Length: 283
Image 1 (cartoon, rainbow, N blue to C red):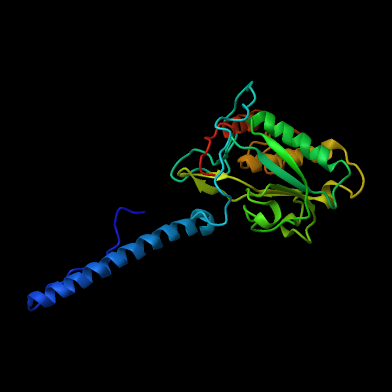
Image 2: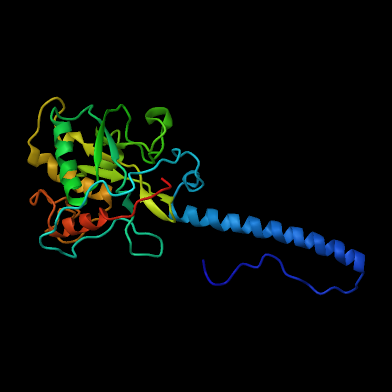
């Protein structure tokens, strides 16, 4: 908000003065002024949330799980770094801060897989990429089984009718451009997530990784790991909070850089930092 506060009303000079009439008008102005202040404050809160692109239902605590306690301390530790590098970029940062939006390291990240259309070894490949991401960040992941859920443009973080009273598990789905138009062209996969506020900051609580089965796999058969794992690791980098970086030596280069195949020094430095986010008592 700028330093100039909006003028809710202005006091004007009166041509005549009648004490009782003045008191009635003063009381009326007071109540109207209070109502205007409340309405304006609500408008500014709503407007700021809309400008940030976050759901109002999440902002005000509706359509979210009942409060639950995390472990109280991180469930794991980021892997030891060899060489560090500044060749990484965070996907989102906290408002008016350079601190990244992260997952709560005190809570397990649950995930489900829609196996339809995917390769026979799809689960194995996803679990391998998740293990690499977990080792780099210290974040804990848990497989909750298969799902029939389809990818959606604005997937809801909370789906109690499908997943119960918890944040919706991360969805991994094999798909195609007909179902998921963002896969059109040479896009082999993409990731979506919508942060939610808690403890005066933003956290990732759910998301989805959508993979182009036509490009990466043939339904029913197994595929070589080196054909799929670079894309999976790249998308998991996005899921936990890394953005693209222009350095072609990093896996988070926009091309996905299958020649590298796995996380490099810049990727690992960023992942290490993303695994050191704060815990939350409010999620």
